[in-house]
Image 1 (cartoon, one colour):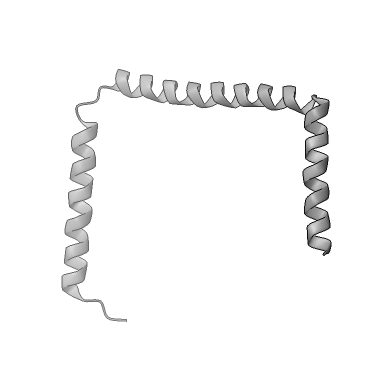
Image 2 (spheres, rainbow, N blue to C red):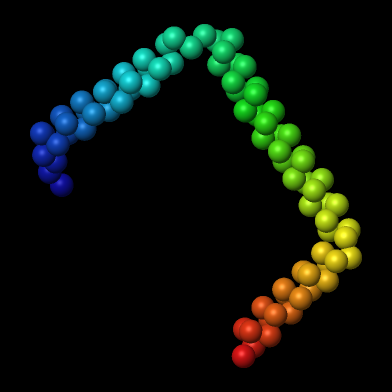
Length: 82
């Protein structure tokens, strides 16, 4: 399997260019800012997960929700049986 040397050179130049671009974005960012954004992102994910979990739990206990789920399940099983 022979590789075209120009293609390899072009790929290396592209990889170096992308690495320089990413590095130029990361250099001015301080470690404090990076840690803050990381904690903020993780905190946002945890908060939304807990919030949606509580919302889902509250609606699972609702009898109207249970009837709705049963109707959906019943309609899907009756359509697939046809």
